[in-house]
Amino acid sequence: MHRRCIDEILGCAGMAALVLVCFGCGPRSEMVPVTGIAKLKDGTPLPGGRVFLTGGEKGANGEIKPDGTFVLGSATLTDGAKPGSYKVFVVGAAEPDTRSYDDRAMGIGKAPPSLIQPRYNKASTSDLQVEIKAPKTHLELVLDPSDAALNKE
Image (cartoon, rainbow, N blue to C red; front, side):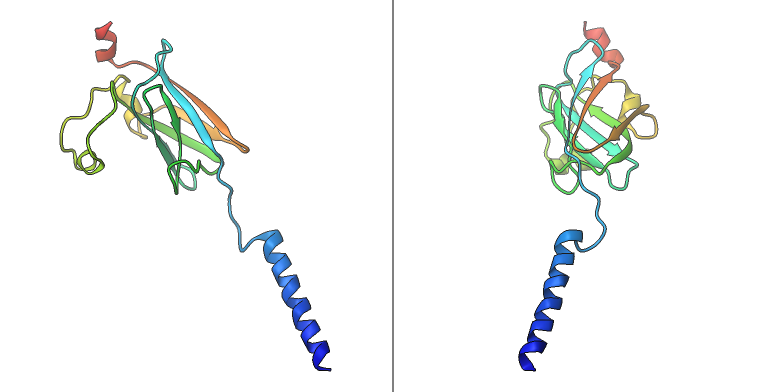
């Protein structure tokens, strides 16, 4: 009799473990890896700045490298974004911002000049929209140059 109870308990525990493995511990939305490039209309890569996604379940952002490429992250620097539609805003500089994170956050020091139109700098004025889809998404952001960038030519 004792052996039969143990077998039933082990059988129930095994089924519970199987359910957890197959279905997880609750609803979750998978993150989608997101990479991209930010460039001006003439094809010149944006050499610095940051890309932000807003409006989804959870936003994401990533630093623009000197070659214009970026990788977006949400909980970590490179984990991507949840699938869905997002508004995009971009802070684009003529060169990478070498100020510390704290200095940038507090507005200390001077930011590098922007190469892109000011409308891209805020979610409320940017006209950029993207759709993040599994299994992975690559974004190509083509941006209008700022007046200062046009006057350099």
